[in-house]
Length: 245
Image 1 (cartoon, rainbow, N blue to C red):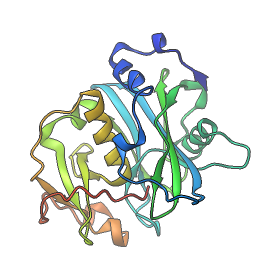
Image 2 (image 1 turned 135 degrees about the horizontal axis):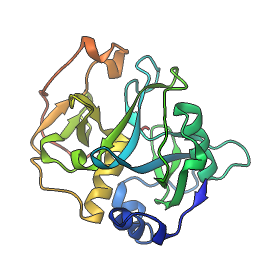
Image 3 (image 1 turned 90 degrees about the horizontal axis):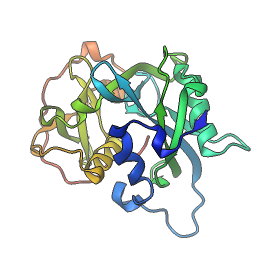
């Protein structure tokens, strides 16, 4: 890992690095920990890179048989080990999960600490530039089902934006990603991405009445290939984000 100066990142990434000095937690989430709480500490790695289709983000899809949020798309990351800082934890988790070489990644800064009420985690997204992209693969199949290198062009394309609603009624900004645009990106990670795109002015207008439901494998561990649903049957957004990573 190296720390990168602003003049060492590509021009297209400057809006993100500029935002790191201005953005606050309330720009990304409505949740704050109650006074006196002691949330657990975690970190995730928000990795930007240059791909075949231009700028992209590196994301993982959780294993489909996990007890907690199977199949959910997220940033690599997890809890801090004793003595670690957030950068070290995020890079370690990315190495353990998908073999991302820490030496190929330049940390450019942090987003504000964000609180996840259901799990009582205080999570710091560590923002990084993948200066020397190399091979990555699923190293921990118990944790990771797939790796997604998602073009920013797809994240801002109105055709792939959706409002996601779960069975209990909560909603989240969302995206349809993957080669067939059949993978649902939502919840904590989808909310961070959507609101960061809004903050830096990259978002395009989209129809928030377009909805998508969560596939059943996100609750039962059933593989996506056995439950392919093109479009949803859920009501419009209530702007309440599902918050567990």
